[in-house]
Length: 153
View 1: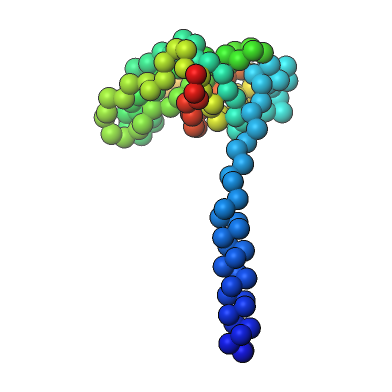
View 2 (view 1 turned 120 degrees about the horizontal axis):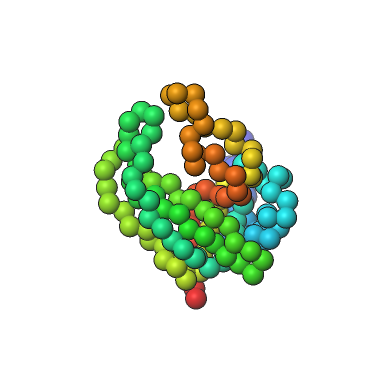
């Protein structure tokens, strides 16, 4: 291979790499809560981005996995936009006992990436006695947060 061709190929490759790295990362487009509430089935177990104002932020007591590992710092919140509201769970940190207060507060404007759970689609959770666990079978639409971004007021 000629040195001029090698230099040209290297230059083109590096130029292309620089262009790709300089492109802005496009964020997922947000979905209104009203659209999710109108027809939750297509959103079931899918990740969506919703944004709005936090209402009713509640810290939860530690909970335990089947392995016995404790999970700390979980909380529940309600996200509200102009089309409706959506209950969202934020899971705890498992395995290491820690105190984590909810970084979110009522009134905060946020953008949340969350997995949607349509009502009646999760099946039933049963205890050792093979009876349904009260309160463990949510009948309402809700979501589980994977990422929270705070927005400017």
